[in-house]
Amino acid sequence: MEMRQWEQSGLKTSIFGIGCMRLPLQAGQTDSARIDEAKAIRMIRAGIDGGVTYIDTAYPYHGGNSELVVGKALQDGYRERVFLATKLPVWEVKSADDFDRLLNQQLEKLQTDHVDFYLLHALHQGTWGKVRDLGVLEFLDRAKADGRIRYAAFSFHDQLPLFKEIIDSYAWDMCQIQLNILDVDYQAGLAGLEYAAARGIGVVVMEPLRGGALAAHVPADIQAVWDEASEQRSGVDWAFRWLANRPEVKVILSGVSTMEQLEDNLRIFADTKPGCLTAEDEARVDRVRALYQSKIQVDCTGCEYCLPCPSGVAIPAVFRAYNQAFMIEDLASGQSSYAWLVKNHEDASLCVECGACEQVCPQHIPIIAKLKDAHTYLG
Image 1 (tube, helix red, strand yellow):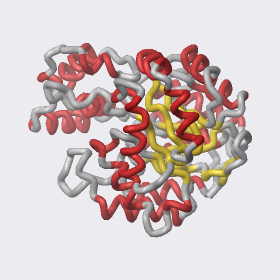
Image 2: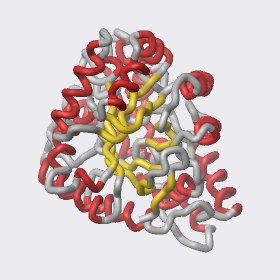
Image 3: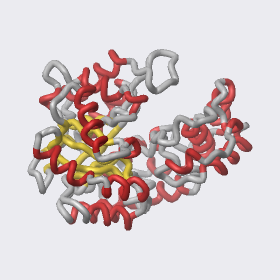
Image 4: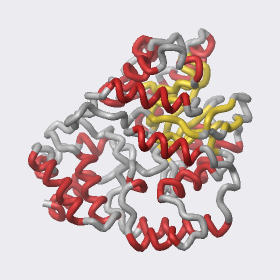
């Protein structure tokens, strides 16, 4: 496993970090809260045994159960072998007292006396101003001083000017941004990566496969571009290597759901260093990016911040089916996925246009209109 040096703190982390947002579910379950604990624990520990030193979770993942399962997985000596990251749910903060209450609750769930990286979760224009004015930066200083957290950080879902404002507001140890071969100019993007790195701030990347879209069936025209390369690689391999080629990236989070995915990730990240792609490879990725961008209908990453929908619409699942039909050029597959949502009364026809989802969407997607489009096409 390749290890990356953090210039500011001097620590080293594995380039591959396990994201615990898409852990395996119990057989037959679609409720994300119903984690198959035995499988998840085996998978997390297998990753650590394979060289992973960074584990990422958060307060809302898997309906609040991700932190509980991660805490169990890190018993028996595994906690001491990793850097553990979790996140402050800024939308739950109503007063300054909530900062300590939430952190202490998370430490209890994780069965630890400290977290290594504590992130302000999914900052955007609305949440940043609120928690800043309530004194969140002073809280981070206190929590670092008393040892409950080691490194202060934030994850981000908004535009580049706000990202720069947040970066310049505090002595951050790390920031987490969405970045992949498609999202080079989206949110913080490559410009944000370089801006943070120039200030000595370590950057952790989320959504390297764009919510799994880049791991799905690869359209024939895109596969043809990959196949022109002298060294044959999967689309997942190309996506990870494109990120790992950048020394500013310290950790790439992959939300593995199966042992097979974990093993494939361990294989790929055993040989990913800055310089692992040639100029010709980079040009090939540019061509693939242009092809994918011409196919996408909704820029949804499946973060699930829009859930639960008051009307029961499984919004990310609707958009996954919609994009699936276009991106991987498989209408039947998209319609099949959507039919399952209709059967389970989770389809877009149930939308009453209350707008609750649009108020919290970090991607600022016009969800109501896109749900109508998806239903018309797939229904």
